[in-house]
Image (cartoon, rainbow, N blue to C red; front, side, top):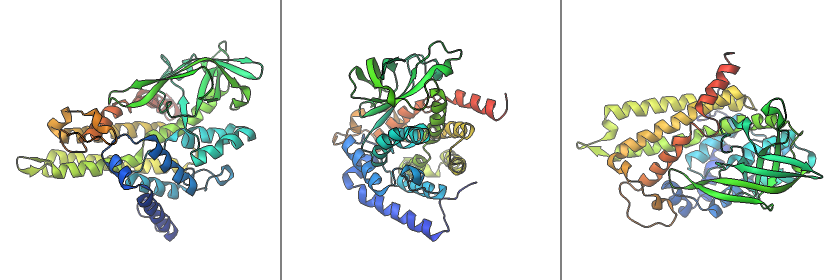
Length: 400
């Protein structure tokens, strides 16, 4: 099933599209708009305000089924919401609660866990982060070593997580831990825990990335006591829940909606940048690259719509989206950097701080473009490398 979200014929869908568009115009004020347009780092209070506004409308989890407190959006409605918010350059929908652990909790959690955690996710009263990767356990995630030992009504957790996005903002972390180190297969001894980040024994340290931004962190656990009631599902069955979550994550990592913004920026740059007295938009080489990017985006949108129509995405479709989406991100941003030419060599990280009023080398968008370009060099690695995704497709679709 392929969805043409760009031109819905149902008048109710058109009405919904206009409602989302007007909401974005109202809620994204001039200050936030300026920060977003320049690619600067959005302060947490602004980001939180946007997500809470979505939560009040029920739109943050509109795609959830009504039985879980969502609006039960159709795939068409979900696609329209994504298209309009992304087209408005709205802030990132921080997926860790809404797209990742939320579905795990409402699918595998106890009634008490659902009652405790789902309302906070729906309203963005709670920020989540993901405790999966460890030093030495990234693509080979099942080799993780963080231990959780049962002690009465608690688990005692010791270990380290790495590349933990937004851990410095998060209130809770969902964590894969090893509860049976003697299991015959490494996947069989893993459990899935929900951990309050304020628990004594947790330390968060920043990891500064290639773009000089603070998105990622190390998280250390030293004798952290976690109530056993925070275990999702059954002990030692965490790998099953992790795979379920990863399918949702990899669909999200494709980040379809950002591409329309990227391409709009690219067209603007091509029109404004001149070489030999003519705009680069008339250069045959750049025209060909732009056409290829637009065709690849159309294909990716169709793949994404098909994955949404499946309800719960399968691992194969999620893997395909992850590959195509991450590679397209890199191709678009590389083209934008090439258009910047010599200005693409000067990266002014300070310009990404909201309120910065220094002098930029190059177009005002250049710092944001270069930051995104540097950051997205890892897009084919995080969330499962492209090599891992191709192995999933080879095994699941081709039987290799």
